[in-house]
Image 1 (tube, rainbow, N blue to C red):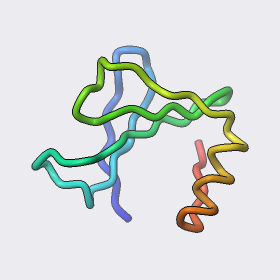
Image 2: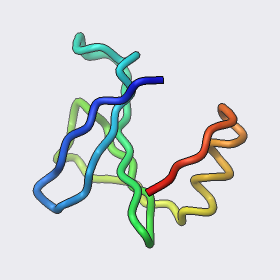
Image 3: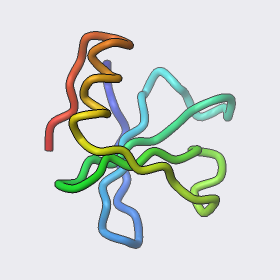
Image 4: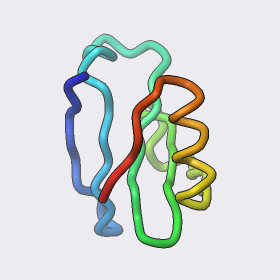
Length: 71
């Protein structure tokens, strides 16, 4: 899977799957930090984020697709 990358004003580096395209639709962006993995709606970047402990996010990603998130 390819990703697109953007650095936010808070210094986090956000990743969005290139499979999402640029035509809108349902898409999330993910930024991995040392204390939390943050998730946000790509269509409403100012609308807030969800934060998950890195171990919980890694377990979710492993369950959902077999990949892991690394910094």
